[in-house]
Image 1: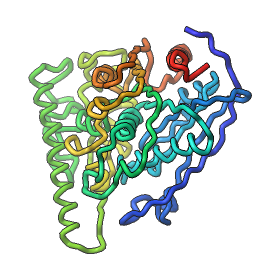
Image 2: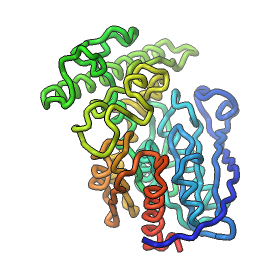
Image 3: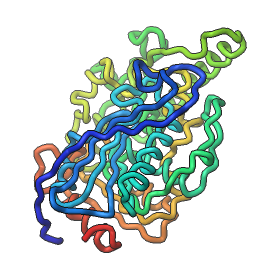
Image 4: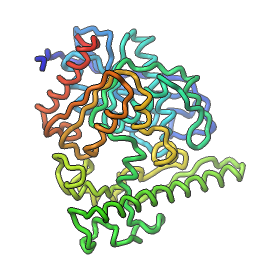
Length: 393
């Protein structure tokens, strides 16, 4: 691998604004309530190192500028932009199709205002399926409405395709991840204490223990899908009821309890990698399952259909990958405690690009926290790959 130079970096605040007409205000505060969408990001520019290439990181609901990877990329010479969506740090009302338009606004700003000639779209964690969704619609736009039926014409948005893509430590889709993590023991959505003990993997009295039998795994997964589809049916019924009323109430929020119960959290024999058994990226999975910070804990009806529904979300990574032609680098972290081991390989195989590469970083956890060697390997791998294609000198 190349020995990389090191630069001081100058972080700068970025503000991107564009007009949008919406039927109602879905985010709290100024961000989208005045007919304008206001986005905030951070650009890292290596001092004394001009570049015509910009690496862009974006997550649907998180901010990425504090993570090790983007800053490390910049310290070794890459211009990096970390983009916040209009739903930064709050995915309760998140509409994936609108996040795509947010990402499109950043890329247009990078090309037309800053003058970058090449964009490398870096999909890390939850940003992986977003990047695939964006690129598929930039290359071959098809979507004219959200899963809830609201108009959003992504062809009219004139999305600019990225020149290359990096899919790193990223899962298949928010909807697929939630389905795999849903606790199927929940019997009553309004009362999380009513549970089927035979499906409660955190109940010490449960006779089914790791390593789980193939029959139990199949039954558990089927029960997860059943809960997902039952919840989605309720969402659609609720949304239809509001529409039929014809009044001013257009949306509703709700809570979904116990969404952090993937069998892989407690059974290291399922899709084995180097992850820590009995642990997840939020800590103790049993605590996360019942806590307020679990996946999809709070949602609106429209947001559920757009980002969480297994059968309705357009942001399906494997499906989006089949229409992508841009060069792709897929990176699996071999000790990832948030992304299932098979996910990177699934995306790699699905991608239609004729120029695609997959690499595995031994021992790497999801965040590379306290892992300078693995972080350096990841950065070197990305920059070497870009350099081979003329995107990094």
